[in-house]
Image 1 (cartoon, helix red, strand yellow):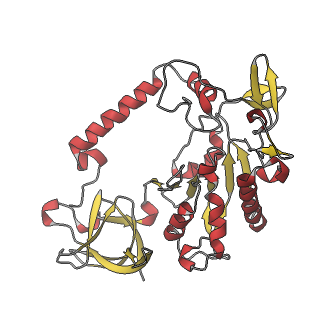
Image 2 (image 1 turned 90 degrees about the horizontal axis):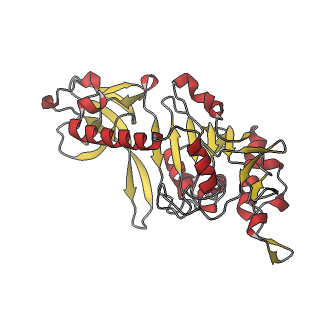
Image 3 (image 1 turned 90 degrees about the vertical axis):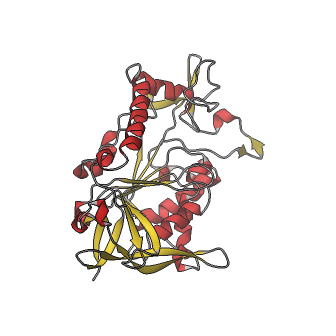
Length: 360
């Protein structure tokens, strides 16, 4: 029976034969493998090769390969792998969804967080290929789905995961069961009412004016509690999928704001801490509120985006209030540390950079 292990060196080449003639692929630190046989000089493993068919489709095929360290590398065969229970790698995969964002965070113990999902079926296809052999009775547990904001190109791809359950091709199906749904509390409304287009200020829910500023005061926690009539089509589609998941097992809904770090306490036992840095709300008449987006003021930009806080509902005003919570110069310091780390990684190129020896 194959034994689950993880790669414990920076890189490990997998060969079709122990003579190291045909390279199958290169694995990285933290990649999981199934070990079928060991000798004093090599490790036989099972892995998936992805074969492109004539019609352009990609089919996974289970093959056997061999990890055979070179003597000159100084890596002992017993150093290449560690048991899965000893894995210390936090994996983050950024998926090519063409438009928007979609990423997967996997903790060392295998807890999964999905962040956004693009606006098409690519994210669902990726997940179905990664988490195989799921069924309605044995779905893939997802600890948290985090939707950064309600622009279609960031979450329309998530209902595609639910739709994949009925795909005619079993390889394109993913049955999952989320435990938590986190979001920023803003629900987009229909763009028209009685056949007439609505002004922008009415598309994000109830508002209240304080002085010269307009604030969103209709932030919600439970998306299932919002009437369909107050949702645009993408939100209604997402709500429908969430209702199905909720019927199978209760979902926890939470609107995140600055300081809600305890929302990720489910990772605490693994020594992982996540800080929630936004959005930053203010209290208006006892309700959390976000300042309505407007045109950013003239002046320096943090990045090249026309709205200096990035896309969607965070915008310049909320981004600026987030900056106000931190000492001056913090962001510049973080950028400097990153640059120094990059130079160090390139210079060390192996053992000193990561604490493990590379497998050439």
